[in-house]
Amino acid sequence: MSLVKLIDFREIADTRGALVALEGGNEIPFEIRRVYYLYQLSNSFHRGFHAHRKLEQVAVCLSGSCSFLLDDGLNRQTLKLASPAQGLRIEPMVWHEMFDFSSDCVLMVIASEHYDESDYIRDYEQFVKEAANA
Image (cartoon, rainbow, N blue to C red; front, side, top):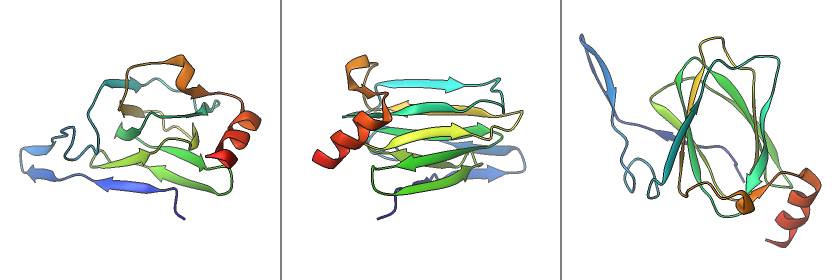
């Protein structure tokens, strides 16, 4: 089973530049409830270190690049995200970590739900237990 689920967005480009439009229920496979972005990231640190019980996300590198580690409790995969015309879908119950940020990285995350701390699993051992029972 592949944990890497990439979404190729329709890019409209000509000599003036490029445009990508994202709509909930179309390019984004859920209703959008929250959008946030990370920038001025240090390549010395990893981010993430959690999974969500219900929330779905699509991560897009608007500028630069970064790497992801994805883990479902049994399988692990890594990938580099480096195109603003491509998104990484992160489904519920997938542990994720982000690292190897380029100096110009701007990482946008589109989420299916509003922030809810109770949806987070921040302890890896707890995640493995819950994933085994899912």
